[in-house]
Image: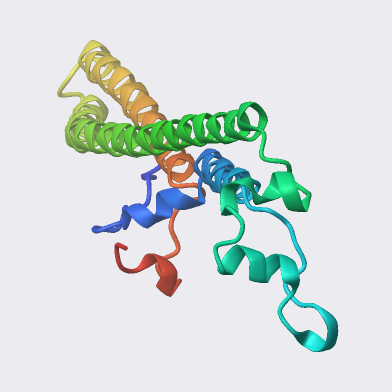
Length: 211
């Protein structure tokens, strides 16, 4: 006998924000954020590092020189000290940081695309196996009824044991196929949980509405 077990229903309208919890998506997101921040750091390195205030909190001479046009901002580093404006070094660092940001952004986009594909494949598989299961359950019920009738006829002497055996030979493969489909349906549900980064918790307001 096959237990009447099937995968739990998947709620309608699952928000795509659930995919943001996936470890690969989060890792790619953090990497992109870090690369983006490093671009800002690389740009910031072009600015001279000087004291802004002097004695008694007044504006420093160096800052005053920059703001009154007595010194060129982008060359001030060479005159005022740190960081030195070295086009080959600082510009190269900026280009490298920008390239790393573009790469990290592409990796995040790929991780997001993979997440959507995984969720789609899992949902499609679960729907397919669910439809197959429904048809197989109908067949199994029909074969079980046929076996029950053949058994009663055999007990009453109205049918041979061969008739009962034939009915059983149709039922057992159908039950086996149904058990396999139930397994496949459960596996597709597990894959959906993984695709969503841990199933769904629609009691959490953060995931109730698409962003």
